[in-house]
Length: 125
Image (tube, rainbow, N blue to C red):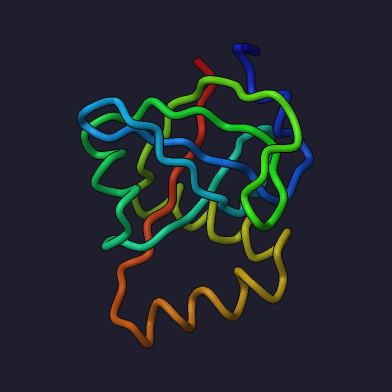
């Protein structure tokens, strides 16, 4: 396994694998954006992956299709929850690289459903 995020650089969708308490892997396709060499993704506060990330921020990332099928090798990483300033940078990067989905649809959906949007940065391990 690679120890950097080179495997996902330049892709739009990754397979983010989080781990349950018993060690079971839970893969999820998520949109990713890059800004100044940093990788970001977003989710909402009630998603299952948030609970898993709170307990264990260690993940595996791999390039993937929109359907969540890995298209390349995985790499270990750590997902770090971002607060206000860095979260705005992540939100802008996602909106810039996924113009319709993350600039309009996802923020609107989260607002309508009453979700709190959370932004994470992926750091290589």
